[in-house]
Length: 360
Ligand code: KG4
Ligand code: ZN
View 1 (cartoon, protein in one colour):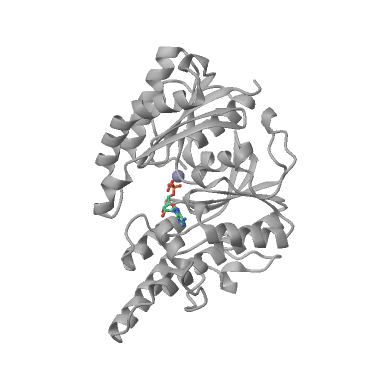
View 2 (cartoon, rainbow, N blue to C red):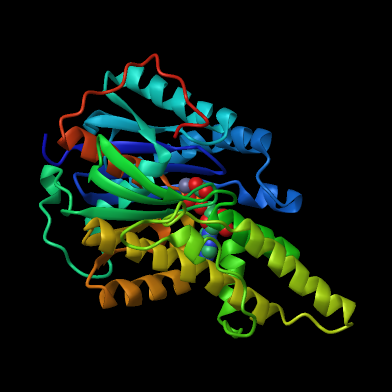
């Protein structure tokens, strides 16, 4: 089916998202976040997140339908995040989606949240960098597509042969995710939670060359050569970097000096982004991927968008970047992937599926 109208539901963490997409066209993206309720705990509390989804779901759905000017009856299929994420939070969205599917008789698609972070990059609106020729309404992908997925839980380089059925993992973090590193370092610097946006803003006032922090898994023994790739050529590690930031802060304190917070933030951020952009571009060059799609919450980072676009353009790689509001968790990304599945003729899910909090 071309140009199906898809309702997407997201509830894997603290965002209750409902989005509507027609084919590759974004109609609306309504998000209600319970972040304010988690801030004082310094992280998302699963029980609070689940209750907040219950409170927010019906109003968020009503708002999304009203904004798009459509009714549930107009929808061709419903898509819902079924994992990975917080088990209780996922259950709220999945139960709501099943109830809607049962009541309306519409087909339901269980969606992998991580693939949805990639699929959202295929929406017309989200192609921000260069234009690529793609017949997206027919469910076609840009040829030789790679993706860099950077979120609070994952940091991965992917090869996307089919968004519906063939997403291959080329490399991933062996410890902390990039977003997790931002959050932990923000905590060390006393910047609050979530840390990514705070570090992004503060780093603009700092000197990224002030402190040379370690670039994880970039030593020759890990990288190998083009002929013989090392064991972690496309992998990442950020826990050593986080420790290095903590040591650096301690040493300022021990000397009784004021901590140059903006310089530390900028230098830390540069260390993370230097490695992820360099390795993603390297993987593209070596694996014949000519388009690189950025996805996940960290893809909202302004310096990442700048550095990735510089390095991709130097390497002759087309960069696809979702618009800011589509990088962090939302329902439109779930609808966008649902639309791709429908357009690719994928069968809907059996309504008996259960959410899978550790879905790969
Ligand atoms: O994709 P997402 O919304 O949720 C997960 O699926 O994890 O990503 C959230 C992560 C958090 O770690 C947050 O600190 C990070 O994305 N993040 C950022 C920025 N905005 C959000 N990291 C760096 N710079 C940003 N501007
Ligand atoms: Zn996410």
